[in-house]
Image (cartoon, rainbow, N blue to C red):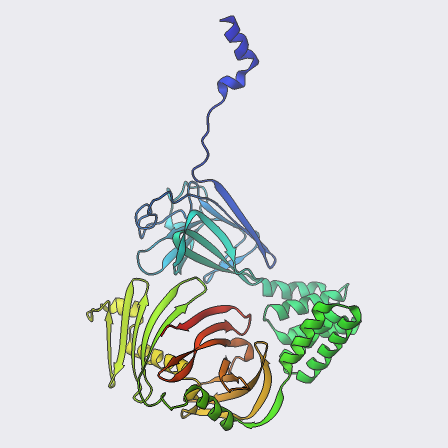
Length: 497
């Protein structure tokens, strides 16, 4: 007995220790700096563990803690905007309301002391924002938050679990903060390189080019030429439409890079000068189009008969939409059967009559039709969209198409191409289009467009890959879409015939 007492005295931790199992939903935190703002999300990570999560473990249409255990907490050290609501610096609880169909709902709430959704009070909501869930191609075992698409002006908080991904977009007041700091610290700057830093900010983030030029001019007035900085001075001038000045500056940057032995900038500058070169050819626009159509549609099949196309339309979230089209260029009729998740939608415009069905049933509620955009106007819009894209270059003969007379030899996607600029009559369209043809066989290699009222940085460009034969026509097999402004990938359309 005395021995036991002595052991207890000498080793009390043996008697007081307790077994603690590993947490089933371990704590996690992920932080990010965007612009001048630091943001974090703290949460607990449950596992799937063979269960059906959404719709069973987590009922549809009920508030969920968007994690496990205590509240999921969003913390920001500066103001942010979610939806249309500005959220001040602080910490907030995050909830989600999953739905069987349609959008889910993000909820940002001011109460951060709850255990999950217990005690949740809707009256303390700051924001409720709808978000479209995306189906993942592989199951995510442990719930995870990630910061994605981070830029100085915005970022996305993305949750992935089981088969679902849902994203909360956040915008930041960085542009106003930059302007405020510039007013305070750059009139004048202590170091002229600060002028360069703000000029690059405006350039790199697709913001005001005149402001970028103004700041870059202040840098150039104070500092010696330098191959890297002179390169971006050249880019600003070129993008503003000062092509000759931009080329002179780029040539100077190339010369400086060669003197410095910087092969990386030598290669970039040489490529930029190639991309900016525009050599006027003697070929007319009509002649180029005739040769291109002769290549793609040698037997004039496009306007004579109907054409069946089967497409796989993939998007960056890994979703794939399968579409079966019947195009009737000679009658303006149209038939589209499209798989959207579990729904098979058919919309037709035949003989001037609109018809539709959902999963083979023509009795579709007004609410469902509106949700799936099954309307006559939408059908005509889809007809015009698909007929135009898959009828190129033949569609460039349509009434209302205005070919610009000059053809230039340019660099496009790293290749020497013939560029045809196309405008449209006001009643036809207001976008400005550029089509690029292989100078060897006149095949269509890509195209780009921008919105006339907004300028060249606002459109999209399309790269074409491969060919497939449809009714004796040579059509591009794949179309890869990108935003012009930031080269963001938008998706790929592939012909499966």
